[in-house]
Image (tube, rainbow, N blue to C red; front, side, top):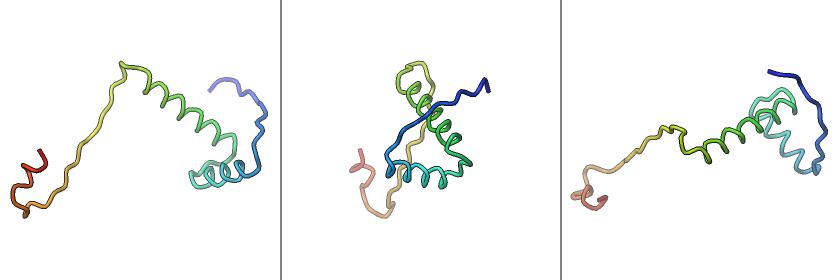
Amino acid sequence: MGKIIRFGVSLDNALLKRFDALAEIKGYSSRSEAIRGLIRNKIVEEEWATDSNVESIGTINIVYDHHIKNLSNVLN
């Protein structure tokens, strides 16, 4: 990690309480760590959304009742 820069953030009290609750649920040890995590996640999200060269992996799961007749035809 590079040099740490300190900066101030102004938030509405209700928003700060929600942020603190989320940070605690996610296991962040401090507000600074939580903010860094959110910023990193958002940067990655934006890069994936805008870069057409990014490889993605996914799955398609199909669950059906094999006792229902012709269900495979209905799903087509």
